[in-house]
Length: 138
Image (cartoon, rainbow, N blue to C red):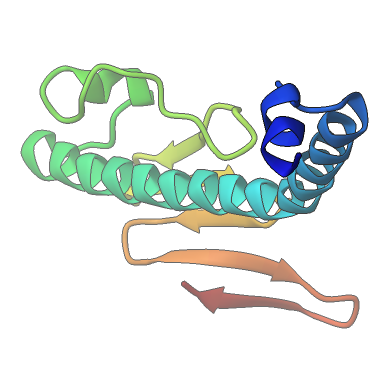
């Protein structure tokens, strides 16, 4: 009789399928914050890496030409790969220069809103406190 019971049962019941789907859905919901954090961390790391690459390219351009490039597009002629360099919020890096003293700044924004700046000497994160304006080197 026990053998005939198992032979008659051909598949899963609707309740079993719904229970499994509910468990999988809850597991997926629990993973979403972790995936979001990992995605933001990857974007931030790529942004800092691109900022360092552009900083090195500007230094090399200045060394070879005696002046800073007029725009970041000038660096795509042999100094960096021909691609779009964006910050973690998918905006173009801000670039400004002064040929009078040879200084420049590159800035980008992390996914949490922190501004990262490179000026040829270091790459640093700009933190603004309510009391004072402080900088911390990355």
